[in-house]
Length: 115
Length: 115
Image 1 (cartoon, rainbow over the protein chains, first blue to last red):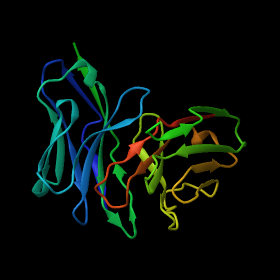
Image 2 (cartoon, one colour):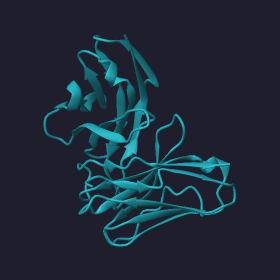
Image 3 (cartoon, rainbow over the protein chains, first blue to last red):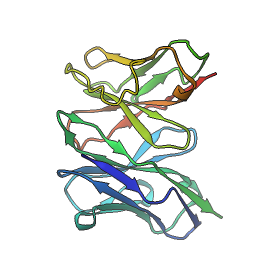
Image 4 (cartoon, each protein chain N blue to C red):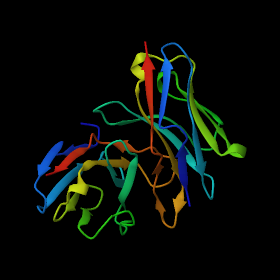
C-alpha cells in the first residue's frame, strides 16, 4: 500500500531565502512521485515528477526535488523564495494497486513568503 | 480548450437535494479521476475510470455518491440527498494513459456548498 506524509503543515520563509518542503512516502514497489502546487482559487499545477530516471528532478519556477530511496524521501527545494511562490504544495505518490493506478496525495504544506 | 473542464464552478444546494457535477477530460486521456478536497485538507480519492474497464469505486464515501463515464468522454459525479459534510471542492483530473508515471491534469473544480 502506498502513502505519503508531508511533515510540515506550514512553512514560513523570507523572500530570497531557501525553501525546503519535506515529503516522505511509503510504497510497495517502484513508485512515481510528483509535486503539485495550488495557488489560491486556482487549479492544481504539476511542478515536477520522478519516474525512476535521474534522482534529482528539476521542475518549473526553479523548484527541484531529490528522490532518496534509502530515506524514502522526496523533498522539494528552491534556492531563493519569491513572493509568488506562496501557495499550497502537495506531494503525491503513484503506484499500481490491484488493477488500478490511484495517485495518493499528502495533506499539503502551505508555503508563506514574507517580504 | 485544451484543459480539463468542470461545471458548474460553484454550486449551492439545500440539504437533502441531489446534485450532479460534470467533468470534460482532455481529449485522448483514457484515465479519469474524481477527488474531494475539504477546506484546508488534502485531496481524497473518490473514483477512477480507465477506458471501458469497470471503475474503481473504492474511495466513494457512501452509497449516496455515484459516478458515470461513457468510454473516454464526459464524466458526471452525482451526490444524492446531500448533507452538510458533503460541502467541499470536487476536483476532476485526467491522465493520458494508465500507468503510474504520467501526470494528472486537473480541472479548476466545483465548489459545493450544502446549506
